Image (cartoon, rainbow, N blue to C red; front, side, top):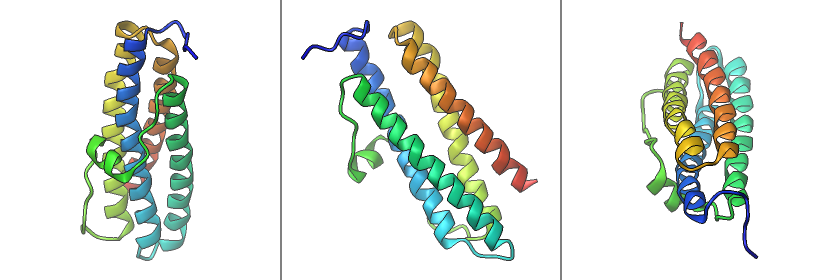
Length: 157
């Protein structure tokens, strides 16, 4: 069945490809947030452990939302770890400590990287690819990451 969304097939493909990169970033961040939740140590363990749990649950919802947006554009979401690691802008980090300060700083850095990536796509989706829906979607997603980054940053002060 032909997809008619008012966006050309070529533009949908370009947007879906950028969303696939975003999905990979979101999935890697989700995994890193789980790592922080599971491996946290320190005097503030309980409160930060619960906070990281909130973050990974929110992250799981974001991953699902990005994948569904790709499907709305009639493309398939990448769904393997191999694909995610090939597409992501984020890096895996070993070591560096399992204290709340170290883990929070790592998560903050990744949220800020995702914010920068999204900010670079908003206008392009709208203007170059005529996809106001995805532009609006990622704007909301960027605002979510900005709020999380603000809260993570506040923990580090």
